[in-house]
Image 1 (cartoon, rainbow, N blue to C red):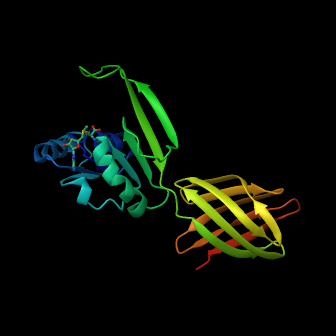
Image 2 (cartoon, rainbow, N blue to C red):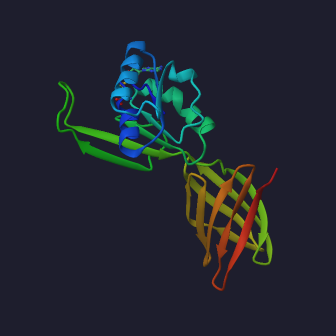
Image 3 (cartoon, rainbow, N blue to C red):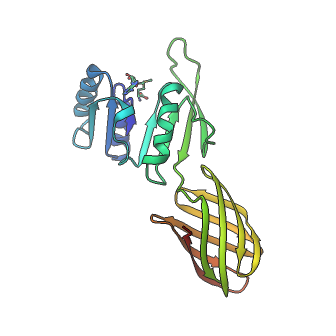
Amino acid sequence: IDLGSGDGRIVIEAARKFGARGLGIELDRALVEKSRASARSAGVADRVSFVEGDVLVSDISRASVVTVYLLPALIRKLQPRFIEELEPGTRIVSHAFALTSWKPDRVETVRISRPHPGQGDESTLFLWLVPADVRGLWTGSAAGGEWRLRIHQNYQDIEIEGNAAGKPLAAAKASLSGREIAWEADGMRFRGRAEPGGRIAGELQTAKRAVPLVLIRAR
Ligand SMILES: C[S@@+](CC[C@H](N)C(=O)[O-])C[C@H]1O[C@@H](n2cnc3c(N)ncnc32)[C@H](O)[C@@H]1O
């Protein structure tokens, strides 16, 4: 979904080049009509659609990729909805303006071969992956004992501490990418997935063997 889709170029190009299905939401009716005409000319009208509407009140929950080239004031209003309404793992790509206090997963600056008057000759693109909500207390059992872990979370940045089979655990290299979660601690390595409904399931690699580890959100 392109939020504020202008003349439709992002959605049309994604369909033309990558076979994507797409939706553009745009306030300006003339631009919506122009986008529909361009989609027909590009031969992608069966894969894309454009609606006249306000992105602030539109349903964005079905997107797997959200693109924005909007002013910071509007992005600030959308940001809480990105976290609350988009599925973990959804990609958000912003042109020129970053989200607030949410570190991008990737930043790329590209040279513009034909800048518009008044525009610089570089363009910056930001990528974020919506992180699963893993904040809180998790319990489970593995490696011969009970586990009780607390996860601290700021978007995709996580810290993990707690108790694993009777020993204190302070995880290093903890990472969260969409639903994929991983950490290392005391010679063990965990790789798993934060599933809907408060369950983290994966594999714990110890010095000797790999065992399943399932953590359930403690209520
Ligand atoms: C800078 S253009 C980007 C166009 C397109 N996404 C692109 O990258 O080529 C921003 C567009 O957002 C539209 N827009 C601004 N506020 C909007 C809102 N609240 N809802 C829908 N569209 C909006 C504007 O009309 C304009 O066409």
